Amino acid sequence: MAASVDSLRTRAARTAPAVPWVAMYHSVGDCSDDPYRITVTPERLDAQLGLLARWGLRGVSVADLLAARARGEGHGLVGLTFDDGYADFLGNALPVLRRRGCGATLFVLPGRLGGDNAWDPLGPRKPLLTADGIRRAAAEGIEIGSHGLTHVDLTKADDAALRAEAADSRALLAELTGAPVAGFCYPYGTVDRRAADAVRDAGYAYACAIDPGELSGRYALPRVHIGQNDTAVRLFLKHRLHRLRRRPVRDPLAKAPR
Image (cartoon, rainbow, N blue to C red; front, top):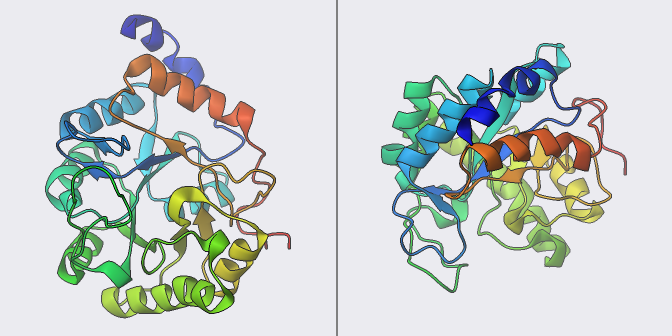
């Protein structure tokens, strides 16, 4: 089956999707106890990035992807994102990214530094990065973005909580890393117009969702979940079918419609 996918790699690389293809990862490590299917092993991540390379594609941060597309140079690039800021990123994901020559965006929770995934009622407790861990990732060239303060559904937050999750998390991360924070990722992937407006007003350059529905533009970028079961055929189809399911992002640097 893998051979049949390889025969299509030229077509896969020939036309960049009208919508930027952004892969959504979470934890990289042991996936034996993984009820939410948020974990891939380092070996699977390496194999997936290897497949992208064979198809003429390379993973980069979302900021780099959008900047390249704005210059008309986004051909062959895909976005790689890692949500929640799990501590296993440093030891398990980062070495694979470096070996494959890829960049990525790491969305972290400055209100839970050194904590764990308390929002997941099932499955194992997974430790989150500390402030030093986030700084280490940033020093390695990984884009650091905000996942909010504490991982709450912004579509259900009151006005004060919404402002804190968007604006305060950006300020804390900028202070922690010493660099501007361009990207935001909606917890649970849920977004509505009110949440998108709050993120834009907080000064972010873009925001990632999962399936933003009727919303489009750079504050509602769709992403594709990539898991342990995504071997060659599944990964190929997720890349190819993405542009058929989503609206184009007409101008990634334009102001999102209100």
